[in-house]
Length: 200
Image 1 (tube, helix red, strand yellow):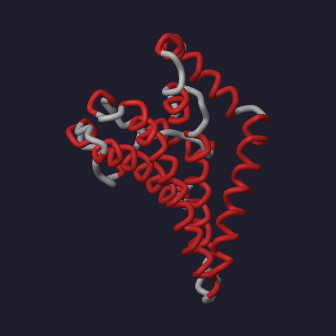
Image 2 (tube, rainbow, N blue to C red):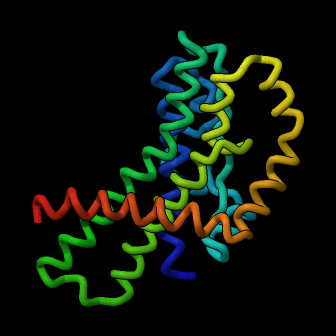
């Protein structure tokens, strides 16, 4: 649990900061006005979501509020903001993986605690990215999907957000989660390994 705390802080803070920064760059000052344009983890962390992540490996942070009407192209820009969080997690996971492999090459990864912390940073960030790209409200993947649907459908889906959340919880506690997450985790880690092996 102690080793997972740095991973939780980095994954959650980086994910939400990426959303806020993308929205700010695209013309929406809402995240900046709400104080979310920061890497300070205490601004982004949600107590229940943090505990769920530490205990179960899946959790959430406080969502960044965005006003799409401030965007020049609301649909496209909203999708960019939505995907910014998961992409930031993949980038942070890759950086942690590179550090881990580099320390291993030079013989500085013999400390088991250091290895565990770096490994959890990689795993948590990958889990954050995969989980948030699921097309289930209120996850980022649902924002991307909704932008392709007619307004009437978007309204209907929004009305059943509570049901969607229950469906998500059911999926995460079923064998389906393992069948989805494990192959994706292995694919992403395989991609990291292929890239790093070209250099190391």
